[in-house]
Length: 285
Image (cartoon, rainbow, N blue to C red; front, top):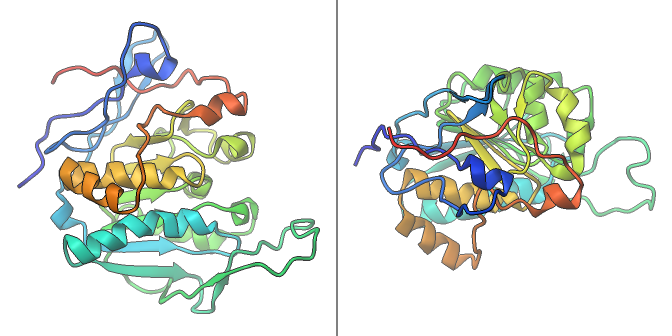
């Protein structure tokens, strides 16, 4: 069944923690993803880009960008529920994409990053390169310490090239910094790892960064906070494009209780001041 064109809005009041408000879900059965918005200069609610009206059955070809120093959970935490979907729900394909077909390590080459001299760096084996002409529905950009590498032109150029082609772009953790450096988050709401907040924000001065937020959806762009928030984002992704029943089934199998978008204890933990940019209140269309 096609998704309706009705728009879901995040709760501005809840995001600010105002008394007398209750938490609301950012998605429901048969609805398009949340359309983000920001507060204008006069405090008015300004709507962002309309979300794509697609169904889960149209989201079958997934790609993940890999680079040295990627975070394991950003990649495999996101893929775990989707792999179950590929087994239980519908046929899906996965491309692990890097600059070359050589194994990609989680180790970063940044000076001082391995002060203990450890050898504890798993590797992922890509099956496609940035030069391949892939037809993807969803592109996933993980974060990790490697994001801080200023010399990643092949990665950011690939993200910029693929963004107009894909139906959905997902960034996990500091992966939003790569998307910001690619220029595709300008004027959009996004969030990132709160522990890396001060490092990532300068990568996208034109981005409408949001805190507190466990994850944010603006048009076809889904961005999450740090590492394990990948599970919360992907469960909402499944709930939005497939159904609440499907989301409950998958979350039960992996024994995960998803957090809502505004359940972000780490903004307070890391003393992040709530941003002026916030999603609009719920309202009927």
